[in-house]
Image (cartoon, rainbow, N blue to C red; front, side, top):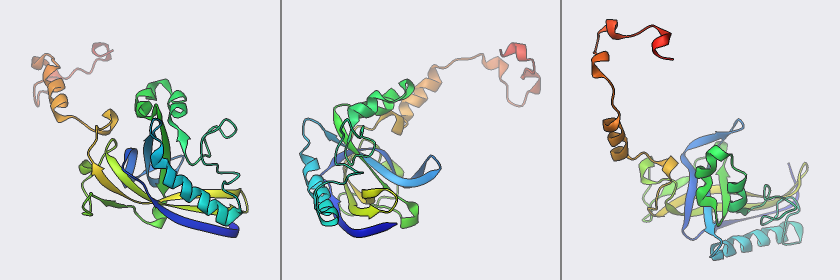
Length: 221
């Protein structure tokens, strides 16, 4: 429940590379479903963050009389460890990933990132190509592509959590096809080649010949 003053504005980013893109279907985390996208900003060129920072400071000033929210800081720092920050440290996210998931977060290295979500109870995000034409085919927009992201930033005081700033995804516009992340796309040619390279004794696998199916676990283990 919000108390006191509140403020809200809408931001449209410059083209940024996206990952963990779930704008066609919701994803589930800890029992909660949401649409969402993460956008990456190179640490070598953080300029795309400037208008987002201006919007953040504006709503905080209007709602709290100061340019930053106590419980939702602008960026990663040691005190908050990045978990509550609007802009997070991609290197820190990569470092704390489980060893078997390091490849999933490889693109986060040397980048800042933002995670922007939308509760399905509030609707579904708009998905368009660069000409404004709706994209319905999931294969036309994937993690690794470059998008403009439109989202709102709201500042308010929560009775439970105090000063808060939240983002809410409105929509994405695809600007350019990027190099898709390996976990986000199946390469048909590579899959076909893998099938062709896999060999087995075809005489043991005859269609509709039940006698050739072993029921002895010793033949398998």
